[in-house]
Structure formats: C-alpha cells, structure tokens
Picture (spheres, rainbow, N blue to C red):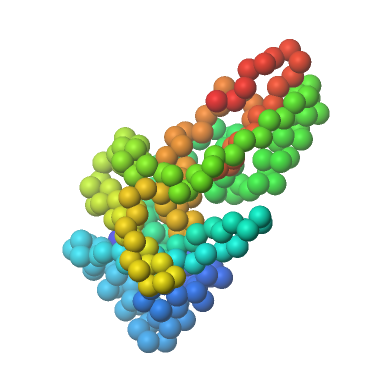
Length: 232
C-alpha cells in the first residue's frame, strides 16, 4: 500500500478523474499539489506518513446533490491526499474481495457496468425466464454498520495497518455545508473511492442460488414457470 509504485498508480487514477478539480476540506486540488509541491515530493511525504503510521485522514466535505422527487443525496468529498491513499488501499483490497463474487454481481467491479447486468437479464428472458423482480436497498450507503463491516474485512485481511486505515476512513467524520463537524457512527458517504468497496463488503459475497444480477444497492432475479426459487 505504501509501495511507491502503488502510490504512483493511485495518484494517476485520482489525477485523471474529473473530481481532481474538486477540493476537500483542505481546499487543495490535484493541480495545486502539482504546482506548489510537486508530485514526487508529495508522494514521498505521503509514503513516509503511511510507513511511520502518522497518516490521519481528514473529514469529508459534505455536498448535497438534488434527487428526483425533492430528495437529496449526500456526497462526501475527500481531500486529494486521502483519495490517493484510498486508491492505493483499493489496489490492495479489490483483488482479495473479488474472489468472493460470482459473475452475477456487477456493481463497482473491474470491467463491469450496469449495461452488462441489463444484457444478462435480457439473455435470461430469451431463455425461458418470464418474470423479472427488481429490488433496492433503502439508504444502503447511509445504513452500513461499521462494526459488522470491520468484522467482514478482518475475516480476509490480517494486516493491522490496513485494518487501521479502513477504520480510520470510516470514522473520519463529515464537515457539513454549515461548517459543523459531524461524527459518522454508521454509513459511508457516497463519493468516496472506498465507499463502493466498503458497501460491497457489508453485503457479503453477493452469491445467489439462482441466475440473477446484482449491483451494490440493487438486485434483479428471474424465474421460469417451472421454478419459483428466487435469488438470495
């Protein structure tokens, strides 16, 4: 995770993302880091902080995004520094947890997208499946239990440095739009690089008994006339 190659890949992914122009609570963008510090010095300093365990994530900056129907979705915008660490952490965690998922799970997985899930559903409907049931987990990201999530992560990860970082990001807090710091005892705000991985971990392997598809907060399953067994 603190390997220079990992951090460089993580920086490249953060820098190439459109969100690189959006600062966190420290008000620094990726381009500002390049101009004021330089990428090499920035990553060297970050690597040292990770190695001596002095790194601490800063609170997320809250941004409320309007949703249809008058509701709002809360995004949590991390600092560029924290995003680089999260991206590096994801490089470590993703290959481990990927082995837990069946092909029917599509959400936030490498080389998979929602259109692939739709294509699979269409395939089943052309091969005797006549019913499609769609479901949604209400406030999925908001209700993630931190204790349960950390228990699942510990089953697969033994490195205490990694576990400490995952927990630190979960507990980093949120600076709301009124400038008040809020603790987050449950949930993980959308917008974080790690949020999808944390959400997938909280749901488990995503394995189903019958053919179907799954995205992080949604699922769909089908059945033919000869079967009434539904995805778990």
